[in-house]
Structures are given as structure tokens and as C-alpha cells.
Image 1 (cartoon, chains in turn brown, orange):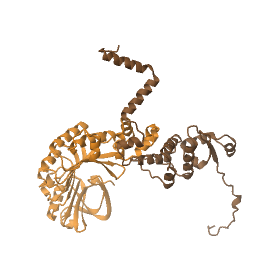
Image 2 (cartoon, one colour):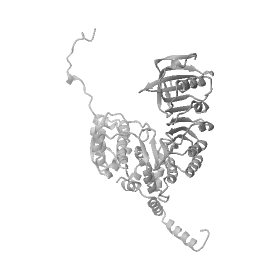
Image 3 (cartoon, one colour):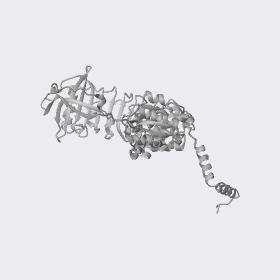
Image 4 (cartoon, chains in turn blue, green):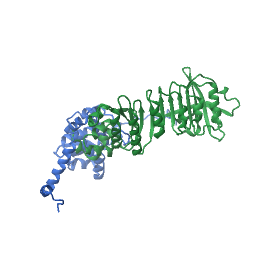
Length: 201
Length: 312
């Protein structure tokens, strides 16, 4: 029988079982709760593996406590899940090793990341922690764009980069904090050197 | 302000990978830690560095995966290496290139010479020897003196030499005394004699403004067939008066190719080229090459491409 001659059957759309979308519940470290679709979660390798391992049913999702994400606050997590919902179903990019990394920031992402630098830092940190490849790419690209046309001195200010001297001082302070006797030993050593001793021992 | 150094490793790597070559250098200058981070996060040979010895010497950085060329200008070099004499741009460019190659994990790709003292040339020579590097590309600009480029040819290890309308280049006869297997691109106003080409041992030669006559091309093809140019696999000469190759191939065993026969090869500048149709000729040692005369805007171009260069 040809396709043209096939009988037409009216289909009652309501009778077709519709696959119910599952929404997982997550809780930030400041106890803010978020409902995120299953498809959006696939953008995060970490969360995707976590929910797969948990094997929750729709009932479990509603009845069991929200999944806690200890390291991320509510403000940041909101941005992360907004991004995941907007980009749900999109393919996760594979690093082709091109240098420099070719990343375009879509309009939605640009608006989402129109935030203060402190929050942007937290967003990058969260994207890294939750392994959301494309969010990490775009957020890092935004920070990389800040470097354009800047001198090293300006870059130090923008990226809060300590100078070598500041790094050294911080290292010394950390060592001293670990071992309070280190400073005394160092002072004793300097004193003996001044007195003309060749060897500390 | 973003606390970049507090970022986890993968995020920092992603950030540094998104920086262009110039930004990477600026970032590396912030501290020793930053320098180390750039070095770790930059894949080997992902950037091509070219030293330009001109009135305002500078470095050009070209990311391999991107057509964009970035310039590290002299003013920036002076600001960073302020202890060096401000008056001499050429002195600063070698330490600067050394630093750049070290931080970006890459080799020196090429040099462009327009103005450069003999002293600097000696420094470059020593520097290249210390780095154990050859130059993929060397360009001689119009004002560069003859004694200097002869020094370069005798001392530097170069793969492709490009003469760009050099005024002191009266002839190429001296060139044949330097028996080097390099690719030669001559973009000059002087006529390149057939005898010069016949004495060359270069594997690839491109001559722009050749002004050869039909008889020169005939002699060249005959010489290639007799095995006088055993190393030559690519020869291109432009700005000829067009003529049909059939005229010079009488008595020579040559096979005409249909115009729809396309063969791809890599050109002298590592670019993709296609030769369609033409004639196949066979040298006495069995080597086959396609020769073709093509015309564009009234100017003709003759090509000989050895089948050993074909990609398909």
C-alpha cells in the first residue's frame, strides 16, 4: 500500500503518554533551593553523574531532601542554573586544543555575566567545580577580554596579581605561621653572621 | 578585579588559553608565578615568532591556529627592559625574542631584515647557535646591504629566503656560490638569468618579474629533463609574455592533461596550491613533473611542479 493510499487515523493527542519532565532540587550552602530540569543538568558533568548515581525517581525528587551543593552560594548557583536552563540540550564542546581558544560569548551569556568581578570569580569557580565546560569557557573568555590593551602594571590591578616581592612576603608569612620558631632561628642566624661566624652550627 | 591566582588550575588554564599571544606576554611579566603559569598552559610551538629588524624593530606573534598577527611594539619592549639603551631598537629585540620564545614554548620562526648592523647580525648568529635553531623564513627588504645578506646566507640556517625588491641586488650570480638547499622567493625588479637558476641547488624557487622569453623556458625545461636540476621540485616564474607550451614541447615526450585533472601541492609559503591540466614530462631518472603556462590579466606564469610534491 502506498503512503498516499494509507487510511487517515485521527489521533487523540491527550491519549498519548507524555514523558514527564523531571526537575531535581538542589540547595546552596546558604540554604537556597533551586529546581533544575534533567536536561539542563546534563550541562554539568559533575551533577549529571551525581544524579545518575542516585537513580532518583520522580517521587524521590519530590520526597527526598534537596541535593546539597556545599561549596557554592545561592547567588552564584542561581546564575549557574539559569545558564544551564538556557543552554539545555546543547552539545558539550570538546577542547580541540586550538591556541588561542576560540570562544564566542552569546548575547544571553554576556547579559548573565554582566555582574561584579567578585561574583564573576565565583561563577568561574562554580563552573570549574561543577565541570560545566562551556560556562567555564565563556566566563574565562570574559576575564581574558579584560586583559586586552592593558600593560602588566594594569593587569596586576585588574587580576589582583601580587608582585614577586609580595609573593615572597606571603610565603615567608605562611612559613612563620606554620613554624613560629623559624623567625627566631633566622634572627639567630643573621646575628651570628654579623658576629663573623662562618657556620651556623 | 578578579583574583586570578586563586582560580583552580583548570580555570586558570582555560583563562590563559583564551588570551592572545601579546596578552600572554603581558600576563607573564606580572610575576614569576604568572610566567610559570603561561609557560605551563601554552602548548609547544603554538605561536610563530618573527623578529623584524626595521626602523622600528618589533616582534610579530602569529598563533598557529589563527590568521591574526599580533605585534609586540618597540615602546612596550623599552618599558619592560628599560635598562637597555633607548636609542638602539635592535639590541633589545634579541633578549625580548628570547624571553618570548621561552615563555610561549616556541621557536623563532622567521626574521625580516631592513635595517640591521653587522654587530647585531653577529649577535643573532650566536643567539641562534645557542638556541640550536634554524629559521623557517627570512625576508630581505629593499634597503638591506648586500654584504649583510651574504653574511646571513653564509651563516644562518634558513629554509625559505624571500628577497623583496632589494635595491642592492644587482644579480644573483653570487648566490650560486652558496650551495644551500633552501627555498628561494625572488620578488625583485632585476632580471633573474636562466644561468643563475641552472646553477642553483635550491629545491623550490619562485621568481616574480622574471622577464624570461620563450627560448629561456625551453632551455629550462630541457635542462630539467636532462637532470641538470636534480634537486628542483618546484619552479614558478611570473610576468612572462604568454605563449603555448606546445611550441616548446615539440620533440619532447610530454603527455597533455585534461583541464579537469587537478593536483594539489604545498606552495613555497606552505600554502595550498592547485595545478589543473598542463603537461606531464619525465626526467631521465624517471621523476615526473607537471608543467603549465597560465595567464592572468595579460601576464603569464610558468610552473613546474614535481609529482613528489602532490598531495593526492
